[in-house]
Image (cartoon, rainbow, N blue to C red):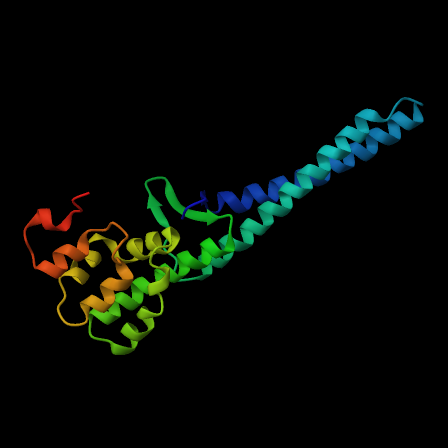
Length: 196
């Protein structure tokens, strides 16, 4: 997803828990320091600065918990496809809920495209509802990850309802180039790549 950060689980959940706990410890330290400085009749400026840092940490902890909730939503959604790497599963964690929704819609569209390719008219009808999102990079990435390279090529080689599927998978004007090969027949490998 554009504007996303990749995170691994359960490491992300553990980091959020540790950071949230550290916020409370810094706040307690600031209170204790202020009390000690007051008892010694010294300026409390250091305690005030520490309390300000604790406030900034709380704001960051709140943002991390918001992202954690988004990630938990992603994990519960079968339409979203994480990236598998040699070091573990990487979840794209968007800043924006709209980016998350576009990614989930792309995953759903991939499943519908597979069903539509098998002749499922209902899936084809539902897939066409996603046509307006085809230019969204978050939607496109999730769609292509869901289809895989083989799935994309198979969709372009389909006769019949394939043009309706293609309008969602790679509409004209996106620079994909696949529609030229589909429109003009298989003209060799060069036909599958854009000329621009």
